[in-house]
Image (cartoon, rainbow, N blue to C red; front, side, top):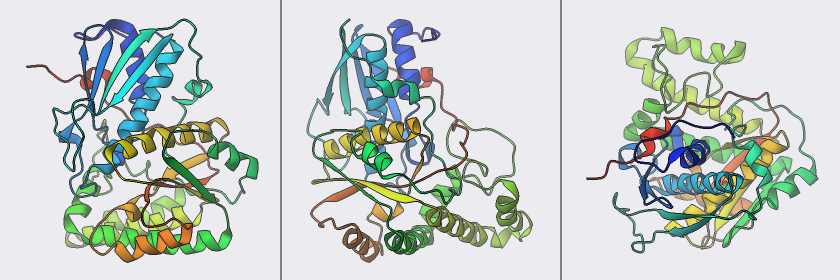
Amino acid sequence: MNEQPKIRGAPGDTLCCILSHSVLAPSPLNTQPWAVTTRGDHTLDLFLETTRLLPHIDPTSRQACISCGAFIENLDIAAREVGLRTDIALFPSTWPGAIISPDQPVAEIEFTHDSGIAVDPLFSWIKVRHTNRRIFTKELIPSEVLSALAEASDEPYTTFGFSADSTFRQELVELITRATEITLTDGNRFSEIVSYVRILRTSGNTYPDGYGTRDIGLHGIHGWLLYLPLRVVPERLKNDYAGGLLVRLVRKQAESAAAWGWIATKGNSRHDQVRAGRAYERVHLTAASVGLSLQPMTHILESYQGMEEVYGRFLNLIGIPDTHTVQVLFRLGYSDPETRRARRPVKDLFRSMH
């Protein structure tokens, strides 16, 4: 592994190298809602960074907790690569409630040197894995590949489901489209989305979070045909057109899925959410290892007003009782690779101690 620069207040190059892989985890709208502190030379505490949460899109911070699980999975894999074993305790200070205090650690991670620890073959794919929002090809996914994804993780209390059935896919497209329309009818949610999905900004500035037009699939001839009217419509109509553009784009993305997958938990505790995130990251890393593209599509899973009927129809479609919670829904298929989204520098992870 390449050596990383030392970080003041952190225990040297090794931790910096581990965290440089941890931050490559997915997060809602690429917000990267993580912060860490260190205690001594061997213990790291992971927190939710409240300034990077999405109070309207992710009002319960469920997606943020899932992203913490993905962060932890990358961290554990990267630690193994340098001969460190991790002892991970979720929410060590108290049982988490509906609101997570910014001072309440999501996880306490203790590192122990272990020369005999097995490395994880998925490590090689951490820097390759990325969310692909392109339109997928019509190529079918072999059943053995879907089986490999289903076996990618044995995270406790989580269940997996996959379907490539054409009728199933057609029904889910309609539900996904309707869920997106419901999401965007709320002004606060719309504003929060376009603050990170920057289709209304013409500046060439780059950002360490969120997405640009190219990142969400608005490139090439087809993408520009969709996007061009937004550049010329009167200012008062831009929001309406942007909302319609996002709905059309989501529908085209959903229609191109060769298969769908989901991760569910029997409950919906914070522990369930973090564990689902760890399981999801392993599935996505495994998909990357076999050349498969993946994109979460999660609006349908949120408890927004008006989403109840759509979510209920979705549960019936996938055959899961309403006593369970679907934590992640994702489309699968083949596509040209995308570039990885930007990440904040590792040094920005560290929370100041007062």
